[in-house]
Length: 123
Image 1 (tube, rainbow, N blue to C red):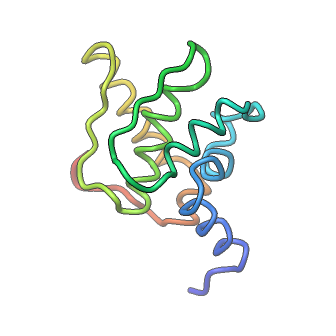
Image 2 (image 1 turned 90 degrees about the horizontal axis):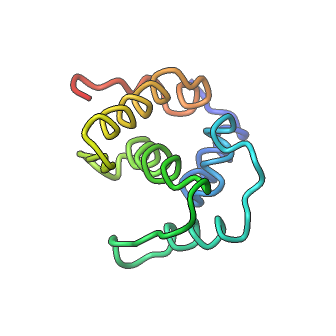
Image 3 (image 1 turned 90 degrees about the vertical axis):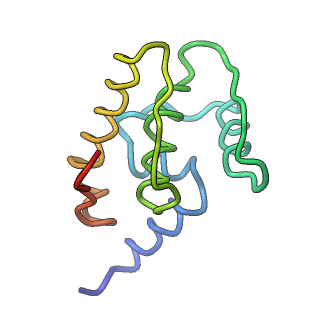
């Protein structure tokens, strides 16, 4: 099956830019325009080099959505990681974030169109 030019552009954009991936793949989660502080976060994430990065910003700026949905989803879709361990305040919260990620990956129509069915044997 041939892939459209639009799909190729979306795939390339998602691979190249975490900010682009947020808006393109998760428009319902990332509804507001990004602020300059978000640009700093995305630049830090996309910067080559150390894999250890710390993000400290005020509540309500989307850290959980970025760190527990967007980044793991991008890693899964680009096959950059075999295992992803959600980190949260409690085990229940980490499990909830993991379930949110799984549900989004399985039900997001654009993700299914661009990447196919990505269900694994084990989540």
